[in-house]
Image 1: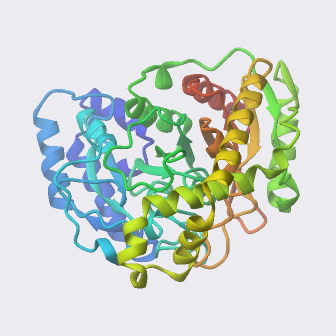
Image 2 (image 1 turned 135 degrees about the horizontal axis):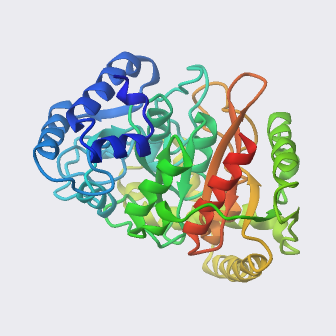
Image 3 (image 1 turned 180 degrees about the vertical axis):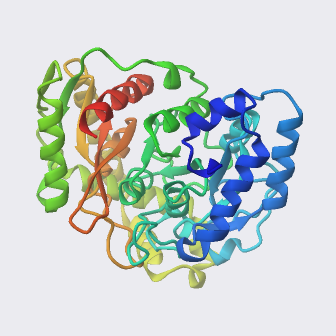
Length: 424
């Protein structure tokens, strides 16, 4: 059977009923990887024999948990005790952690079969890796969770782990036409994940359906409501194009118009949300805080390994170091005020609808795309989910994201199910 094409949710049910073995599903995924990896280049490390041993052990024992027998790919900034963690940088070539990152350990505990490590951009920043878009290898898969998104989109694995600081889950999900989920900031442990910006780094992941992403997120957060919450009978939707909407290209504008036409007649409320009065600066504020925090997180790499960093990353770290503490404090004060003002919107709306990316996946492999539409929600720490439901003029995927109230991840994912059922 073509087990690799099953959604994670369908595969999980078949595995739990013992209608499908973990070993057979894994072998189907490995065959798909052997076929497609030379073109897509999603993986930096693949441990087929180790994964087969994990699968056989699962088949020989009881059902372990919600992810029992599901192959899982892991972005190569997560520590893994049995595989290298190289962070997309020559500085970490051959680095072998002693323990798993907490998120990886949680997934293994729930029965996932960790199959390999996926390509990330350099230290999860902007300099691209080698991964190509599965829909068109001449285009980027997005970043920084490049390989994780591509592997799920190309049916190499049903689920994968990623991280987001600015737009590194939502944007590659948009580029690759899959569901990406970024939980509320602080909901998922970050122990064992290479830091980037301490006030925004968030662990999440990818699936091919909303139910798949919800299944993974429920394990990462320890909250079963994320996979069990039923879709609402009605939904209140706030339309939040955001202050940088003018950067949206025609394909994104078309997807927006299509979604609003589909949702408005069925939603109990669907109207423009009034964002904070000075929200026009939000992307610049997020970028400045991120640069400053990244310069702190990568201080040793910057100091001792500068020559092994890309010029773009050196420039980012130099700029981050140049921002003084008073400026950062002022930015953080504005962010705190915006969090309170945007949180108040959720008294009126269940979710906000917002753009995910400015266009289809960028042509070429050097630029992973502009995260401008993701920066506000990453700064505010809000949960987000990308919904793929359209194609652009070039045939590449296009979609939008839903944004939820902090801590209401289960409500957000239930709303995502509601929206996908009405916009697909």
